[in-house]
Length: 527
Image (tube, rainbow, N blue to C red; front, side, top):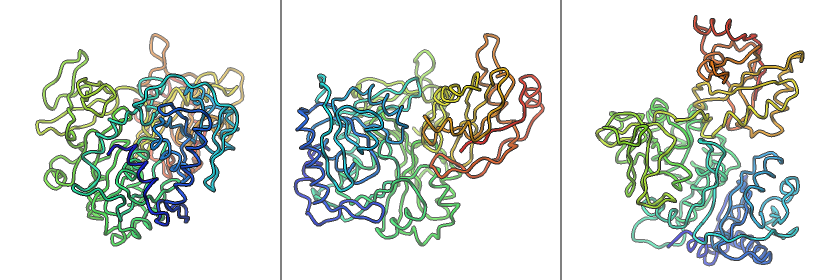
């Protein structure tokens, strides 16, 4: 049964009084979820939107948004998922690029973004059509939903994920064989943003298996542990930053005794972190590798692989999943021998290109003689901060709109907890007074997502450049890493924040860069 049929059956047959979703201390029964989904479906049909048409969905981690997503799946509309954390201006631009006839979401947010045709979702489960829908364009009826890529090779692109891709990805990982039970007695705890592939995959998987959903607005240690303990959860998904938070909070092992495995993805999982978690809690941490383009993971560890190979292959991203082929190629597209580094390519039915074509990724990797995949970073300069992608040019453009900033350059600095954090170097306009930290951060907040905010801003007389006058990324990275943290950064409570700062001491090389490129030794702190 495909995911669309599965969603329709749940909305049609699940018992009214059975709890479907827990969220912030409240419970939504299947009856309440059904009524909300019916209201959404009626509003979409009332707007004259035919099945197969793309419909915008500003997808928040809330029950009524889950109901809207389920309604679109069941009604054979394509849910164009939009990130709700975007400031109003960027949300308006994103919706404009999406070119959808109508968009579903919270009324206040969509009004601020200036969306024309709106289906306003109420927290009581209501859904009403406001405004005039735009004209719908001819669509691909095979798409289940559409998501933006991380933008690692340029401007993020919207990728349609077809029903067949989703069904193939679910086939080997979901329901127990030999049963067609409507609901399972277990729960799925979802703490990742639904507007990102990791969180949305968790939701799709929960709908497919019929598990109760414990939906968190964002990850926090105490409520997550409480949910795992209360529901005796056996398997969960966590990004590396969340694993670090649990260890740092010194959660007693007995509170996690039901857990057998944790799947981790979105960014590289350090072997030391996975091993610490395993040794403390006895929970096997299974790294995965995937992408939006592949409708989820295409490689990873299994419990059996972990038992057999962990001591020898710790740090690997695991092996290709059944039905998936991986290879590593050089700059000319030629496959390289085992253990040689190059660009990773994937062939799978989970790809929009189909099962015959190789898809070249932006990731550098090697595959060893035993078929284990080893990630070696990205082939571009994007920053992965706690599982979220930060494009340096997005941050640079935000800083450069400040009247005192002549030019900005952003690079990633290694971070023990989050993997990497963005740090900016700023060249000021001549004659301008250096802006205060609070002014720069307040300026960035107007158009950046929380995890995109620079961790620090280093003020320089001149940015380091190559002979062709381009900013030297190598010199920039060394410069910002050598900059002493003269001011205490402002803490933040977002998933993309950090609480401790440990930058490398200045080397002779860094001192020379300091002299050559005019670092002033003044920092503006970012949260």
